[in-house]
Amino acid sequence: MPDIHHPGRRSVLAAGAVGAASLGASWLLTGCTGAASAPVLPAAARQGTPDRGGTLRIARPPASDAETLDPASALSAYEYLGALYNRLVRIGRDGALAPDLAESWEPDDQARTWTFRLRKGVTFHDGRAFTAADAAYTLRHILDKKTASPQAAVLAPLIDTNRLRTPDDHTLVVPLKTPNAEFPSLLTHYNCYVVPDGSARSIGRTGIGTGPFKLESFAPAGPGRVTAYTDHWQGRPVLDAITFYTVADMSARSNALLAGQVDLLSQTNLDFATARVIAASDRATIARVENAQWYVLPMLTTEKPFTDVRVRQAMKLAYDPEHVVKVALQGAGTAGWDNPVPPSDPAHISAHPEHDPEKARHLLKKAGHEGLAVDLYTSSYDPVFTPMALAYQDSARRAGIRVRVRTAAADSYYTQIWMKKPLMATYWYTGRPVDQLFTQVFRGGSSYNETAWSDKDFDALLDRARRETDDTRRRELYGEAQTFVVDKGGAITPMFADRLVGISRKVRGYAEHGFEFDYLGIGLKGA
Image (cartoon, rainbow, N blue to C red):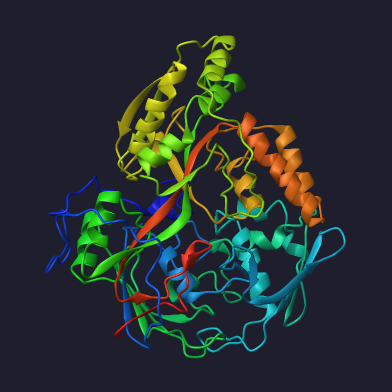
């Protein structure tokens, strides 16, 4: 799969809708409980203080045999990263930047040189002290072509590794090639976890970091275990250990949870039928993460008819996002109105064109595509893809657009369909800083620009936003960028979906933000 840097793309091997009587063949299936009723899904994880100790058992999806503990890699074992490592900067619970291994950071007047003040008294799992040399090495490792890190495409245009400076053990100075007032936010990506100086050859096996857990065992694409690091700089984690199991499909993972054999389903966005079964069970429940996934119908702007901006505009005006949310998500999400910046982002603007099928018809007629017929590709890779495609098909019919929904194989979807067919279904996780979102997915020439849209004026607007040091003005510029994408871009963004995470009723302290949950505070009741 090409977007293996992205947790959602590697993870979800979705089953179809399942009945309450059975979730299919079980992994270690015993004692499965459930109910035939369809309760209202919980709005959040269970509250309360966990007990000290115990082992959290996590079922994760299959991964590549080349999986590695190197966080910079495109094949990183994502579920382990937040347990083993820290970043310089992280996303806080309020969605704002928060200190991690860097206590503070400040730019020069032009936002061209950033200085990070690093924590003292932090040690790696092997007992060695964390210093600025490790922070500088981490950036060089990400940007090293041999690493082939997905985050290199974001940071390479900015950082000249030859000019990195470490004036002392707790200061890192990062001169940039061009001004960027959002630079610290780009270090929150999960490829940016800090690794020890000189560890490139070994980090993929050792997992030595500064995180709340240290590695006990790890098998690529297989099981593994981490144990509490008692000398962690924030204090000992609540849990004694976390055990990871690789489980082949969503039905098997769900059955393991219902049977009480695992406590958390990692990277598995449950379909609604399965979620209702789990929510009704005695052993398990649902943690709901609001607007955690951003669903898209990308139009390849290099392929007809989507080379014409009027056709792209018509495709957006033709459908009702509220209808898609209702049908595809059963209300568990928010209408996107073709804006990829989630409502929780401080830079989000709520203004958008209204659903207008008649205007869509008019634009198509002007473009010479009256009675447009298009193929929309989907698959069972994600349980929401097909309902979203069918809901779009139904809604766009009012504008005279005939959408033929084509179902492709799940196992080859991201090699044969994604970025190859003119119109298809996909998704991303939210949580990306706004500059990274636009740079990775919409800037001309980006390897993850799934619509192949390229507009020099848009790219120039992003450059102006990066240079702007006034927070209010910079937010306004990112607002203009959103309007640009809505009006001219190739991404139909019907909705942001709540992620439905299956967890044991014993789990406490599950709080997900910025791509992962809080490994330090999560625990079990009755551990």
